[in-house]
Structure formats: structure tokens, C-alpha cells
Length: 149
Image 1 (cartoon, rainbow, N blue to C red):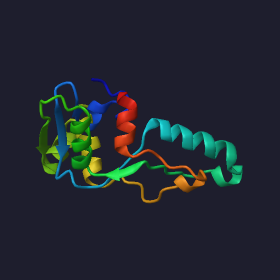
Image 2 (cartoon, helix red, strand yellow):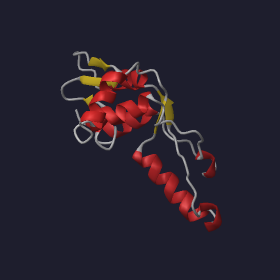
Image 3 (spheres, rainbow, N blue to C red):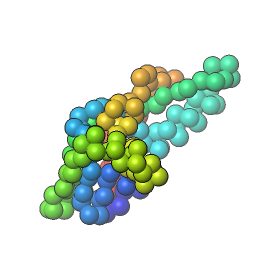
């Protein structure tokens, strides 16, 4: 039961798949941009080899697979790794996470990333997927199935 691509280090996002536990800061309802590494690589390879250099100079490009809340992602993870034992969803208040980040910034990486998600900082304001003609990034569930195969 591994999922190497769920996140760079899924524990940083509050997913403890072997122990069937997901930690969510705040409500878990804020939309977040989720993109697989495979899609990021495809997007970068294409845009770096097909876009004019003046369009890329100092550009910030945004690729997005799908925009989902932590609660939606938690459900997708629970569905994918369903072995009969339910996942435990642990909610921590945003206020509690903020205190931990302020008092122990080096030990509160999970809280910082989850707090950033809750505040909407992990949500692309624009999406540049259209720079790759005819391409569609994977949905979160597609990427999850692909990564866990």
C-alpha cells in the first residue's frame, strides 16, 4: 500500500496512509490546486521547448490538475486505499496550528503546509494549462490510481 506520488512527502500534507490517518487543519473545505509530478514534468517539458524565450523570461507559469478541498482529497485517498479499515480524519483548529507554527517553526512543517492550504495559499489564481495545446492534466483520482498502480 504505497503511493509515491501522492505528494512529494505525503506526511507533510497530513496523510499517514500506513496508519490510516489524515490530519486536516481547519475546516478542510478550502479548494487547493493538486497536480501530479508527471503532469508538472509534461507541462514544463512542453512549454520550455515550444514557447518563445521572451514569453518565458521572468514568467510565473501555473499548472493545475484539479482543484479540490482537503476533505475531497481525504475521501479520494480513503477510497483508493480501502481495505475495510476506515481512515481516521483528525481536525486541528487553524488557531492551534498558527500557535504551533509561531512557537516552533522548524517542528511545525505539517501545520504550516496545512495552514497554507486552509488559508487558500495553495490555490493557483490563474492556470496556464492552455499553453500545451490539446492537453488535459490528470484529475486527483486519476493521478492517485496511476501512482498507486
